[in-house]
Image (tube, rainbow, N blue to C red):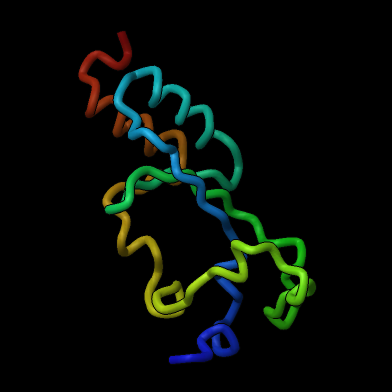
Length: 120
C-alpha cells in the first residue's frame, strides 16, 4: 500500500522513539542500569533481531490532531528517511520482539532468572 500514512489511525510511528543500546547488556551492572531506566514513566526495553533497544513513549510535539505533521516541510531528516514498507500499520512492532520489558518488575524477574545470585 503506497499511502499507508493517510490511512493510519493514530500515527503510531510518531508516538514513540527507540534508541539502540549499542553493546548488548551482559553484566549485572548493565542490567542494574537498565532497571533504573525502565523505572521511568514511558520507558521500556526490548530485544529483537537487531539487538537491544530502549523505547520512549511520547507523541511528537508536531503531531497534529488529524495525524499530520505540523512541520512537514521542515521535518528532521530521520522523519524524511522513514520508510513505511513495514510499519505498525501492518502489525504491532511487539510481534517482532524476542524480549519485552515494560516495567521494573518485569525486568527484575528476568534479571533474577538470568543471574541466579541477583539478590546477593
